[in-house]
Length: 104
Image (cartoon, rainbow, N blue to C red; front, side):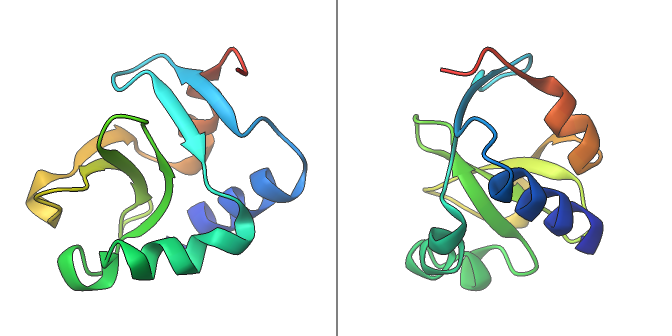
């Protein structure tokens, strides 16, 4: 997970696009600002409902992008959030970042 978190922080610190399309469903990613990561995770109660996961973006349609305990990037519903509901989008941060397209 640490490698993926490092990749996320590097992405957010380098001024890369905060809104992107994806090759995979849910097709849209709206990153949260670096200073919003901890507050949003607390607000959405990620530690309580999906322990070990760390949210970093929204699909704009009721889903959160998160880094799983294994370091994969997953999509979790905001309602019904739990580890068994996680859908893997990419096995690593690097693969996820390579899927980002068309900055919006």
